[in-house]
Image 1 (cartoon, each protein chain N blue to C red):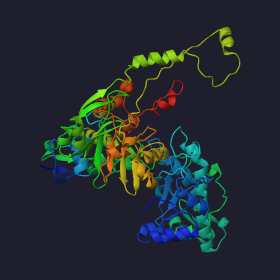
Image 2 (image 1 turned 135 degrees about the vertical axis):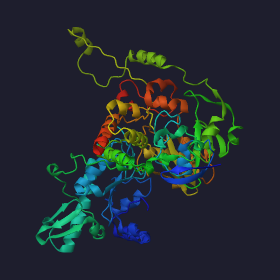
Image 3 (image 1 turned 90 degrees about the horizontal axis):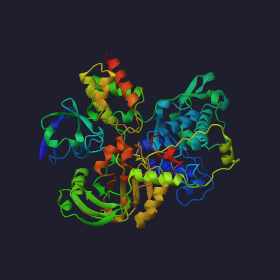
Length: 152
Length: 470
């Protein structure tokens, strides 16, 4: 069955099992590998994407549920907030192994798109669903503040 | 382009240029290899017993790109950057032009000099064992480029200076990029000895240049094992027993095989593998398996029971690493005695990326992409398991950036011919059952007695390295 939606600003139609989680539709059908598989249970955040601007876990999001909606992945980040986040991530050298970082950046971008000047508590609340095995949390928080300041 | 490096010996180089002529970039990219031609030839075969490990660590392109080949894997600990820093320092390279490539598995050229004839990353040895080797490699490349400029301009090498991949002759106001000298430099003999820099003049070492792997990890382009894809590739997921040491008593795959996309279900030493055309089909197939496990030889103790056992063992007399003086007597006479007991749980390394490997097995050989720490041990194990394919076997370290992959050995089942679908590459995702993963990441100790993933079996006293939290 085919599902049509907006993927990174372009209309796409994916012919796949409507129950297939978006994570696999993106990785194996659309060929976008930036979104990562970690737990498959919406508990680690590695697969975070944006659905109509909201950070969601693509590993538990059925393909059918995105029909006619806007999906953004790490490959399609364009907003000024996203660019600021990515620049801060590089400038503060946030990643280590890097596997969780697509998801971290997606969550951080969604946060800044709604809250231009998040407090530490805002950041903790927005980022608590994204696990980093290397423990880069302090740099993630600093980078979100830096990105917010660069847009102020 | 092949990741093989080429000897500077003239015949080999001509062969290379001739062979690479079709591809413009390849033709202009010259490899340096610091070895005598005989050794270079021997380096092609895994059984070489050449006494000196050749150093093949840098490639400079006519486009000024500097590719540094890392014999150590990047797990997030920064080894790519550290290794590149040392070589680029002696080369006087422009850091902005430096990129790092993973070396192929080759115990001859890429041995860890601390471990002996093994290529491996561990024990905090990557920088220490590479230090002299990489400085020498960088300095010799620099010397050859300087000689090339000196020949071209007919001035003494002593009149030249180098800064950020550009060679200057101040008196005549001439300058040349490394890239423009690549062809001439490659025609020169490799100097036997070379002067290394005075550490006072270091501009990269100790100056923390930005990490080479960071930008790609911020835009989704970094490639992990799970991102390796080949035409026709199948995905295998393993259903492992819920307890260490349990085995399959019986299984029913009738529902699994009916899942659209599932190609085959096979029993392997680690459990039951479901092979499918994609992850989602394989996952659904695995969920549909009915398996009865034989727990008779399985580990059934709890964390508490294991700690009891550790405490009991700790009270037993142990082997002495060193004896000096009379400890009992000194302790008996001491006015203060301080006693402390440290207990560390049995931790899972719990990388975010599931343990996985991509295997391409065909008549020509076996290629493996994975993020293991001891490539050449895996190479040997895979050769043994893959049987008839061992002659052509080589393991690719070609996955650019690895996740934290704290495991020492590849899963042999990944190349087990019984799990192989003929002529198709298989991506084997070997990860603990879904129930365990989030726990792994957050509260690893809870998983300990039931953990199915590879972990280091440490003993009391050796735990510090084995916690995985470095």
